[in-house]
Length: 141
Image (cartoon, rainbow, N blue to C red; front, side, top):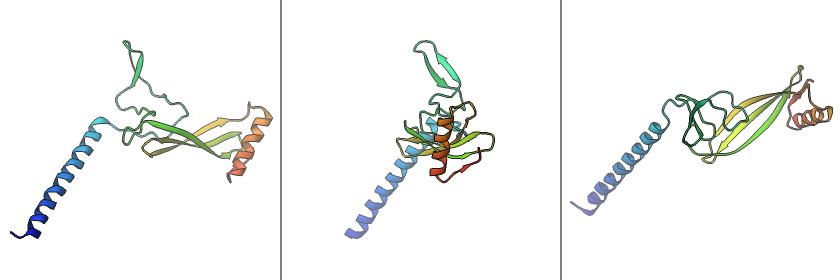
């Protein structure tokens, strides 16, 4: 065999090995997160799951099928930061905000949070109105 053929055969072995490694990594990730469920609505709480408590170390682990919001539902990376975007105050005085949970891997989960403004101080309500207007939202209350 000439040198080009040998080089191509070696390159094929390297590519097949890399493909096998990638498939193995994907299978392990899928095994770590069985019954993955991504909720449609995420609250501001970092630990809003119901689960079982371990009496030995007082930690709570999510029940089967529950999602722990402190870890990325796609790859399991830890939580990085949270921010919101108020976009609408409806005629009933309900503030609608898009919530963004960002994880260290770069994945982002977007949900919605509702806040009733009726019991707030007038100055606080006006600050929310101004914030919604600055972001191009709609204020009806």
